[in-house]
Image (cartoon, rainbow, N blue to C red):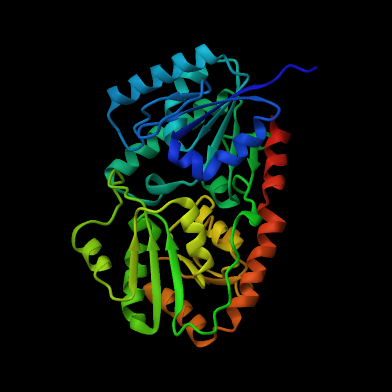
Length: 365
């Protein structure tokens, strides 16, 4: 019998693990000893293979980050893994010190480039410098770089410091289409229901979406499902948030289980995500599983989920007028929704299925 791999996944927080990585880790655990290091605050955990670490997702305090990195190093030493996966930028940055002292194979997973690469503020520029230093260290350590779309690969590796043999593109974490209720074509409803699922961040296009909703008026209904994310510097606040809550055509939901979100997808007609950039939007994939057509920005990550005019419409980034125009296409021709929704399901099965993605990960171990 071959020796079992001992694999660590370092993830920002436990909730993200549950919604994005649970099925992947469960599958890999069938043949491997899987350990999860994450922030478990707010959850009761009863597993010797899940280890708490206060990662401090948005903290830029040097001393707090150094403390977290040293704690991570202690955990890595104690577990003594054969493989370590660092998922997203903060775990990657904290993983530099542990990686210098570990013989395990290292993997960096880019779940999206986010605020640090979209924004040009002083804080974002400092974050980019730190990230680039960390990435070059990992490249020297012969680490694997896993991207969710080709555009992120091009941006990160534009100077060519990563060898091609160490680059993989894997489209997400796998998704089980049959886990979702299919949208029911409802010819008796007066208004179409559009749904947005995501954090209320500027870089998710929420300001442009609000402007488009105001222009559309009462011709359609909109459901916006968003978890509280006050820790994120890009969250909309104050008047912008109040205006959103007070829109007559908007139902704003911020406390709902993932199972209930699946149910809401099945009662909706079209999914909208006017984001400025994504790794691979899980919410869009879930909407596709429920048979919804999409309205997505023509930006990295989003365009991987959509064939323009086939399972939805690509829109211009940062343009409320473009969002409004796409919404009106569905309002004026609701008969296209059923066919486009079927194409969304076909694309899920062809490109993003759980077994396809699981095989990709098994192939790089």
